[in-house]
Length: 115
Image (tube, rainbow, N blue to C red; front, side):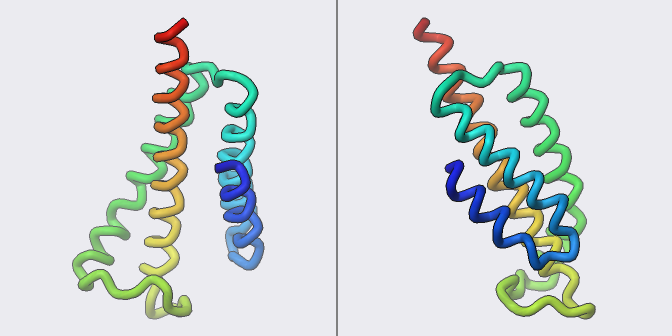
């Protein structure tokens, strides 16, 4: 997962808000790399679980708009007339981050339960 998120961060460099997404993806990459060697404190995971959940949910209006438009392709080039493309991609990026944090939380919980 760490390598995948490093690649995600790399692919953000041409984005207008690249700094935000590079930081987010590199953070998840670092978390995944750290988890290879040590358990991540559950309090930290809960904090980031909450962060990514709230951040992902903040995109709900854009996702609902995209769904109401019939879920057009988000693989097209972004234009001023298609702002849903950027927001939908960002939503799914955050959702992937959220899933990874949930994965780390569940894995960490299993480790703690067996000790």
